[in-house]
Length: 120
Image (cartoon, rainbow, N blue to C red; front, side):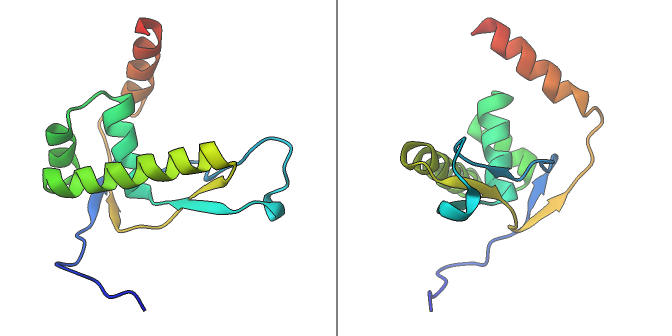
């Protein structure tokens, strides 16, 4: 059994949870694939930095953790996504240690993403 080191992981504040929780290579049945699990808070770290364009310090404040803890979540998320994409594994988004919080405008993120895509 893996032994935990350090302090217990505190819950992250998450603004969005996904409606779609599985992604897989096209044309391959899910039953024949290995699955990489991405936690809700790891997905939130990706969303805040890579979609919203926040600096890690600002994103860490938003989820309620230290910059170091946020960096660990972001690093784990990027590694899992890169692994799945480069080796043809499915990605399952589930679980974690988080608290769902409400935001003032849920469409604001979608608008930011569209604006950012146009800039690229």
